[in-house]
Amino acid sequence: MNSMYFTEEHELFRKSLQDFLQKEVVPHIDKWEETGIIDRFIWEKFGEMGFFGLNYPEEYGGLDLDLFYTVILLEELQKINSGGFAAAIWAHVYLAMTHVNKEGDHAIKEKYLTVSITGEKIGCLCITEPFGGSDVAGMRTTAVKQGETYVINGSKTFITNGVYSDYLVVAAKTSPELGNKGISIFIIDRDTPGVSATKLDKLGWRASDTGEIAFDNVVIPASNLMGEEGKGFPYIMQHFALERLIMAINAHARAEYALEYAKQYMSERQAFGKTIDKFQALRHSYADMYAQMLVNKEFNYAMTYRLDKGEYVVKEATIAKLQSTKMADEVIYQCLQYLGGYGYMEEYPLARMLRDSRLGPIGGGTSEILREIISKMTLDGRDYKPATK
Image 1 (cartoon, one colour):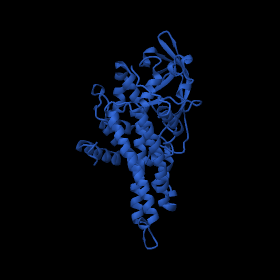
Image 2 (cartoon, helix red, strand yellow):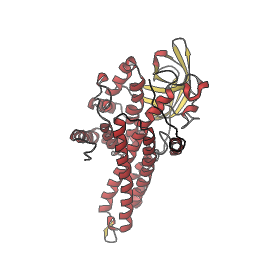
Image 3 (cartoon, rainbow, N blue to C red):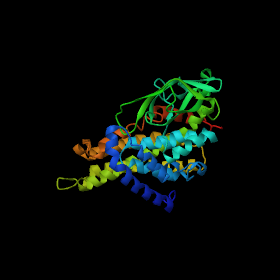
Image 4 (cartoon, rainbow, N blue to C red):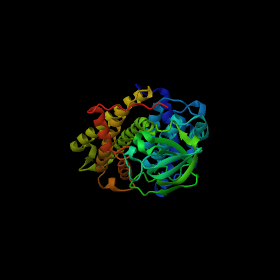
């Protein structure tokens, strides 16, 4: 236990979560990976346990706990070896719900946040577009105000929970001529006329429903605007710090799980009369991989601590995601190599883990984009400011 960040209460929570995942989730993972559909019952079970409300206000059914409970949730989700299931959970609770909580007014929170915490409704966050990728400011989806309504037209892609969610948090341009200063955030019910979704076939994250979503003259009440009109871009950038830190934590956790699995395997697998964990080449390689994992893990914990204290750590979170996702890919690639031919077999966990991990340097901002953001902040003196509602 890292007592610098985790208390006895944290560790009791970790143990209860581990037991819950083993009992309620693990028996269904292979089916969900095969079908690409996560049964709805598990969402309400998560809600009953309070897992969706860890850091949300008590007023709406949350527990208002510190971010290290979130760290534990993220870490343990990675250790059941389904990046898709983990993504579906955290995309709901930390992407969609974050915007609802931060930008939604009381009426929106009453309608959407309360049932999100109980697991009765699932949300998704719709930012990325087919022609935009990481270029948030270049989005083409528009929201035109007509009286007491907005009319939404456009499309989004690579949206986690994009097919089976109940509501969508959508970024659209209310003033296209203003570029990134003309973006606003809306909440839209799935069954609103004109909303349609197509499921995408992916290399990894097979359990999650990643979708391409179209908005064809979708009419919503003006009250579905979240926060101020035109403030969407700073809202998005502000929450990117949490999203990128989440993906960094996911990365160090899956790398740690891969190392734990490889260690156990190497202690049992024999070659030339001894277990393979006695061969110097493998021992030293393992030491390098473990060192990389631990450095990233400790950095991620330190940035979580700062974010939990209210610091604006967008630069540090960007660095955390860049470095941790690169590390996880390298560690998992090497751990698969330790297993030799067995690592390439689907009945062993490394094959799935390798596929799932590969999205790390792509989703939530590609590594190339992150390097450019870091360059702007370190070389050009660019300073991204927190949004004010």
